[in-house]
Image (cartoon, rainbow, N blue to C red):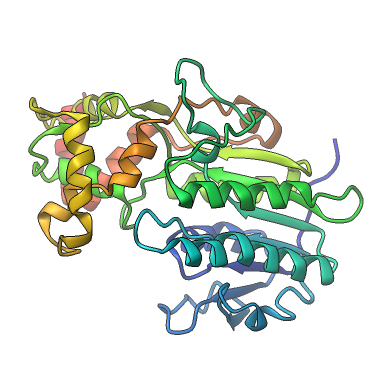
Length: 341
């Protein structure tokens, strides 16, 4: 077994985005200085975590020249899922052409390790959902969403760029992100449930390969240290149906799950309203974009046994993640412990 790789200097793209912010503490733990790429005008980054801030935009390749100079490890976390928020042309510029540009800069700088933060849905989305997918399963290539299709293209670019003895490229794929304090669709659904504001169940049969913030950081660090070039890794915890998640939240917190269930077709039709709903409205929190609903309904169950074995990866137990959500929402730890017991 080879010794863990020790970075000398790390480039992190998308550092100010939700996934980038979740990565920063874990990458800082490697002890190497971090150069952070962030879009101009974005939220500030914690100065204690980074050695250098570089402003640039994946839509403007000229702003990326020399980006990776002096960095032996590049973590590319700046791809952005669209799901109606970004037009198709912008998604291609950011997710495909932007990844190509960062990859070129990494090759020019003679970096040794390149990790793309991908998405398990590029493999999970399938026509038949009867069997689990794993890290060796090839993408089916039939997608409801341009966003997922383009992230799949970016993943393929990175895996094909692997060169033995030169640049070791890998894809670390989170699943559906749910982390307290991070604005995501699943995190919002969990928080709404815990506030007892969820009026009905929806999408009970959807398979969720969940990722908390810790999974993303630990999986990426483990890939840098021990991952094999040309490989895909799934940085996910427990994979279960959304209906099972409702029951798990009830078991952990004592909060009853809604009894009424919204039919999947109605959830899909409501998704067509998202462009006209105010972003911060209560209804907007409960209505998912139609493109996202169609994608979720095609997700197969996921098995990440190889990731756990090769990287020594251990996800956060789901009950612990739900307890953190409960405390964030102001549910007393004693009340939760009593309900769970």
